[in-house]
Amino acid sequence: MAIRLGDIAPDFSAETTAGPIQFHEWLGSSWGVLFSHPKDFTPVCTTELGAVAKLKGEFDKRGVKVIGLSVDPVSDHVRWVGDIEETQGTALNFPLIGDADRKISTLYDMIHPNANDTLTVRSVFVIGPDKKVKLSITYPASTGRNFDEILRVIDSLQLTAKHSVATPVNWQHGQDVIIVPSVSDEDAKTKFPGGWKTIKPYLRVVPQPK
Ligand code: BEZ
Image (cartoon, rainbow, N blue to C red):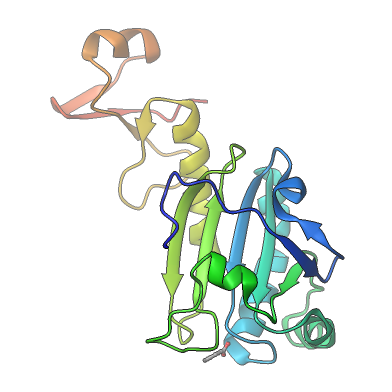
């Protein structure tokens, strides 16, 4: 069964390039990103893992642990890591799960047989400190992901988890946000004492809360 937003991210044990883990225990109280890639020693995946390694500091700043997965064994991941470092100019600095028995990819519905019946698609799950799934996206094997976008979404998720706001189209950290419709103007006066701009009664714009 598909994993939906708000579901508890299923727990699992796994072998990884950083040793065995129990997923929930590994996450601890952090946010998490679990993402699959189709196969080791493939070009797009090589660029993606290099990009995530370069963004590790940005994930750390946001209190997010990142972990990758493919249906290759850890022994293949370990051999591939050298290629990532050589071609992408960065060492792999986060764990990769080896899921040769497809236990975890099946649990997370990462194999879409009508796309490919053996390889994982490019799934991304963002998981909150409550272990609930906050975002899931699926890309085909042929399209590398934009991990800056994943960071942008995490900024929105973390902000909207704390404040009664939503973020508009193409929003970037620091830009104005929207007061959620469930907050009345009366309540908004307390929550946003600096005031807001009403464009329509349902479209109220406010500077990003600190
Ligand atoms: C790639 O990472 O380049 C790739 C993997 C599987 C299918 C197509 C491309």
